[in-house]
Amino acid sequence: MGRPVGPDGRDRAHGRRAAPRPRRGRPLPGRLRHLPPGDGPGRGAVAGGDAGDDRHRHHPARCRGHLRRRGNRRRAPDARDLLGGLVVGFSEAQFAETVKKINEGMASLSTKIGEVPGAAHAAVDHWYLPGFIKDAILWCATKITELARWIWDKITDVLKGVAAPVSFFSYAFDWQDVRGVANGVTGQLKPEAMPAATSWTGPAATAYKGVVKPQGDAAAKIATIADKTATALQVCAGVGLTFYVAIAVIVVKFIAAMITAIAAFGSAVFSWAGAALVVEEAGVNSGLIWAAVAALTAALGTQAQQLIGLHGEVVDTSFFPGGKWPNPTTASFGDGSVADGDADWSLNR
Image (cartoon, rainbow, N blue to C red; front, side, top):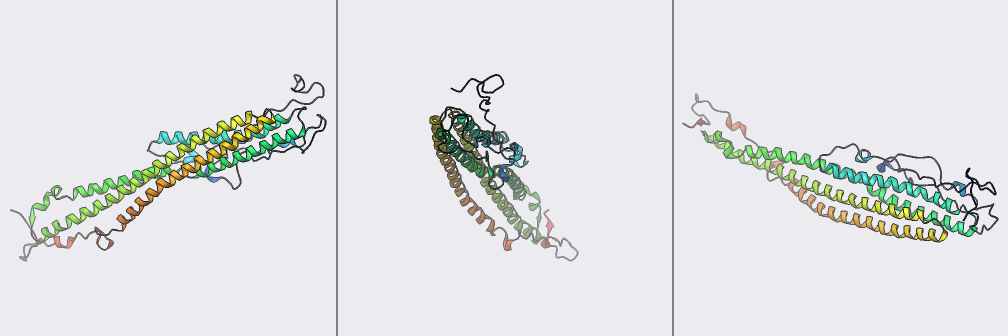
């Protein structure tokens, strides 16, 4: 145990202040999609004592007073920051809650990473610890911080596309609107919906009846393309949402490991245990991230096949002669005179 400490926080016998409380770490950087190169949580280095520093207890290992740089505190982005201000109508509550959990988890993880140096500082600030023990604790703190920053950076990388599912769902709804309009045109061009087609005869009437079906087929083709496009976007959005739910679980899991590691800094032995725990969690969580990425890639591979089929639908000009909308041949409907004796059409009697 340490020496008695008076109410003023100083060692009664020698006037030394009690071990400082661990400093809080730096919050999550402002916007996940715009991290500057090399930025990350808790960038301050853990300063170690001199190797073999077994001097008198009045001379603890040097350089422990600067375990973390001050400043550069940034607020964590809220869900609207991550969404880029987009407003969506698809399962908005579920997606917003997922983003909120990831955002809060990353802010908490950044704070916990920043607390490691302070916890190490407090652990070595005891007169009875020899120098090599202090150095071991500080070395463990450095490694824990490096591993935690590594996993934090990996999660940050995959969060750069967090707004993609929103855009996919939004565009899918737009394409369904296109499909609805095109199907409406198709329905209006059906023969049973056009009673005028049976109320007149002649060359013009024949020409009119002949061009109705190509017009309807062209509109139906547009509806098919729009439907396939919307389906592909919906599937991609759903896969992306599932992916980020998995990332949220990983973040929560790693935060628990960091809390345990910080609490383990009571002694060098437990510090080694804390470092081992973070090493294990870093390996497991990075594996989970890559597994989620692999699953996402496999799902999007299937979507790539659909995109190939969609491309085939787009380049199919069988319903668009010469790459243009079917000619309505309206010139055949113009001559309705009877004075010249060659009227192109007449009403049925």
